[in-house]
Image (cartoon, rainbow over all chains, first blue to last red):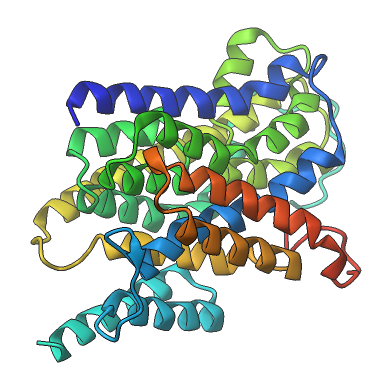
Length: 108
Length: 246
């Protein structure tokens, strides 16, 4: 896609983010406050992140790909283990990349 | 945070600003590596350097910037990218509601500036001062000190990451680091059983809904995950603290 499209997408994402941050600061008189929003937002990180990860590990060319040579799946599972054990973004990154490189090297 | 006796004069603007800077500095330790990482993997996702650097000031929101980079690299339609970024950043509405109480009565230029600078780390650093500290007429300078410090650190880290990333040869599969970042953030985000249900349902729907046009599977999967999490709230063990880890 063109630089112009990228520029417009950046501006759109930035504006949306800014308006969310401004929402209650600017319009608290008109916006409802309640636990409903809080409850919904509590599930946003888990849902969005899982939605982005699952296809990355399990899908290739639009279909489910569970074969042994799906190296990103195995490296991803190793990373999940490391993330659970260490709860560290850096350690997860390092372990996942190391696992992928090792598997790629072993697979020739 | 030593318990100073209440002074007759409240802290001035400069003092508040420096207080904010000091409150934010320790948090930069966690933020700067993430900014570096974003610089590197923004390039790895296929974004040009100018867009990676611009995004850190235009969007100014860590995880949502990584999501943007990944979706752009996957040729996702712009409207879906913007919507997904908005969903990821929707939690800032909660901070906005909390901060609104503190900023009431300030001129508009201050409200716009501080809204732009409102992020997870800024909110976290501001809580102690605003909830527990003395009122003080200049305390918006404290929030500005926090936001400015974080903003500057984030921009410098991004530029550093772009410089590092440009030196890394292609073929290192570095784009995989985006998925790895998401994995780490997901594991940190799941505290309750219902959140695990939300993640599993969202992941399954994301795979099943792949054939949908315009990459709409992203939004469908997110919505399904959120609905599943809400429906599964009964599975959560009652906790002493009503909130999560924070």
